Image (tube, rainbow, N blue to C red; front, side, top):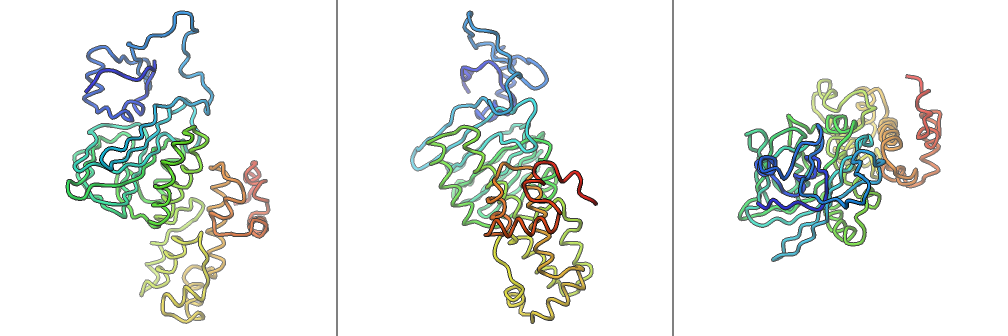
Length: 364
């Protein structure tokens, strides 16, 4: 472990862990005086030499989007690829703030930690297997799964020596983090989930290093960040405006087939869905499925799909920088004008009015 740090005066705990420093490494730097506590969130690098003619550094004065960033590491050693960029968390973050983004093809037996992060991290495993340890409890994680590392937990992870991992990950922070994770069932109590669309995640894995080689600015990485968040949201049909969960319906459906249809809708609401196709998949008649669905949920299948899509659209309009056309597409509408008509019919507002604050007048 080297004591040398990048030429930077202040670091958050997230910065230091992004550099690969473990808890013991950081303790050693504090003990030998290389790092000192500056305040409750920052460490000061005592080896940093500031130009005597320069104005004193004000580390918390930067506006949210003039974010500092650790160097991008892009290595290609014996076929092992690692691409990562880490952004400093601002004092007043967005509702959901990108902190770290990257991809890696690990070496056999590659390990990280133990350490504690002050932001949330989700890894999408595309190949291989390995072990994740959270607060002393270990979990196997393999291809096709997401393993999540919650802020504040002592964690470490290790790639298998025979079948090493290939994964993509994001670190994020902000007031919306807990709501997002609660909605998809991940967090301190549940660290594993399934990847619902391996093809989409594989495509992102291939595109991300190419984008990093051109521009790693915060703004340029945001489209990738929100696409990865969308893949997270697919896992459990996340929709914070939805009143009930799929599991609630199973109590009233003896054979579970309506619950299966609900799960299918919530997983694939962004794709083309039809009552006829759903009935064929369930090996049921369209009429019988429609009757059972309406009896169980109180809505027709089309009404349920529409409400779910609009529920997602409401949140994306408020929480993401996507254009209205991009949000329409992400919610299953290929025609933005049709999406706008449906949105207005359901909410009484246009998507733009909703985004600009009109939702505050929506009647419960």
